[in-house]
Length: 151
Image 1 (cartoon, one colour):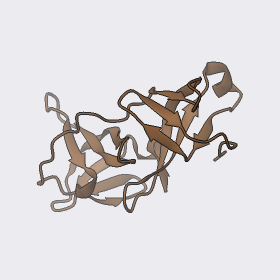
Image 2 (cartoon, rainbow, N blue to C red):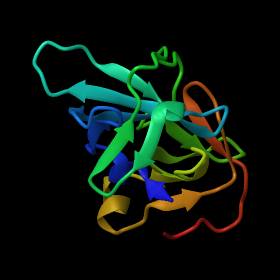
Image 3 (cartoon, rainbow, N blue to C red):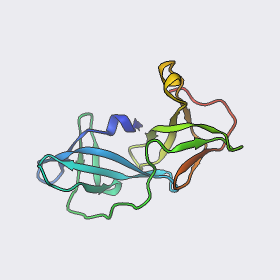
């Protein structure tokens, strides 16, 4: 399992040719499906547009790079879970903002989400992880009142 902040900015390597294609600009999550949709790729060359690599085209997650098969074209998902989405409790009270996710590298499943309660909470180390959640287009709902995970 890996956190998104460990995946972001990895070098992206073409599995067929061994050439460096660029680096990961953003990890895109499909909230309703609770899985990683793919990554957006920022090319090393100027004026080259960002590309989307679907999770199915990722061959291997390494420590310093990711191997992909870029020949298969996939459309960019229209709705994805964005960093900074609001997190709410079941009763509607705002808990904070989505800041990170824990992803299973083998199948792309989102195992847990991390949320921040604000700047002061971040300074005090009070970020929380939750496993029971549901995702909408603009927000995340925490589905349990149990104590949050500390990872």
